[in-house]
Image (cartoon, rainbow, N blue to C red; front, top):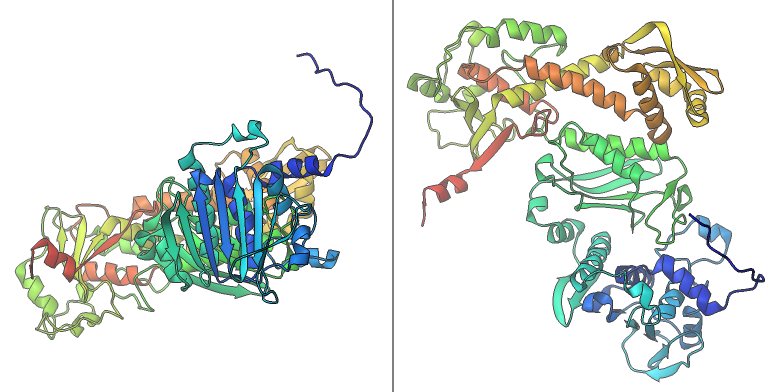
Length: 608
């Protein structure tokens, strides 16, 4: 291709209006960017109620009214000037930014590509004041309550080329509405109203974060979420994470805030995703509303004009904190509150010998493989008997004595949330009763999760075994990879890798984790170096280790059509209650479901 002809021109200062339009290309790329900037200004002004009015997707009009502090009339021209702000005054302020906006470009940029009117009344003023156009406009008396209204009309009226890049009215409105939702989620202490083309779309009163998140993300999230609030040193992570069963096909229900600012940060997203990695099914995405609070000096929010990206001073520490906090919350999804597992499936050690012993006893016993209900009616009577009979290896667990001859009495739900087994259906499902109603358990999926967690714990307790290579694997490496090896020797060794630089362009792998001895060594080493460099640990190693353990657990778990006795089924329930992440199998599928008595009543039209 031929190079374009560029005429020679003298260096000259750009006019202010053109500077503002160039800045607008970065700050005001579509109507939703205007909504974001104006909402952030309203919150920084201390507003407790904000109204957003849009017309034609925000292209024709964006009007945002707040009840914040307002702007004195003598400062209103400065509000429309470039690089003028009340939020920072020194470099120290910039390094400790505690406000949402601080650049001092938004209003000037918006005014350069739209018709803007600013109306505001401060508490010290008897009435409101108004300025239109730019900082050169006249400030005139107006009417209005305490606070500020910014009315933006005909966006890109003077830059038609940019207007051609906008999408349909509904698409642009959708982007604007999403911005309002994001900000409303971060500030449940503020009331928000949103209308489009004179029709009210949303209104959120002041509430708590649990109610605001339930309203915005919907009942599916509200009914399947876990609260999270953890702190470590200067870091605090709080909010709600969705159960794996509330996952979605798209990542459109993921809201992460850093010091109240909505961000899209690959480090934070990766940390959360890694925590979900062995409880999500397929390519599903978790739902969450999380806030990370930390000293503003530890995070740089001034890395992108839209302020949607951040940079942490110690990114690895942040990644590990978020990963472990979410992992711990998910680990508590088992239906238990400190229940202790008993019965033939439980082992004192929980290590690999348990698995072999268990295979040689109850689940390897030659039971009937017939389909259907595996128990006789006498077994049901034994389940509810006041003093059930016991028989050595297949002794009915002592906790079943909590039942009385009257099934109507309450079961000890707090201690045994999965209740007690009644029958086995088609050699696949365990049918149990608890205080809420009916419980159905996929016995293979449940046993698979139990074995998987025990294998992981056994491997962690015994430390990672290292496999030295008889002949070191050498490969070409770029300077970044070589630097990563030299700077992270301790981290690599803790992961079971012995990697050294032979030259400025060559790395040698002398040992790898024994569990991964059959992997492609060079590819594995490169992937591990990438993860160590970006996240301070290897997701690749974790995934491959867990993948192998998951495969082993899947092939070892009790198979379908294996008839179980009542004591064995009850032992399975007890061990599920004592196992982390027991709500899902290793592939993210549910291991059990609850049907409440009210659900059963609806099926049979009782009370109707």
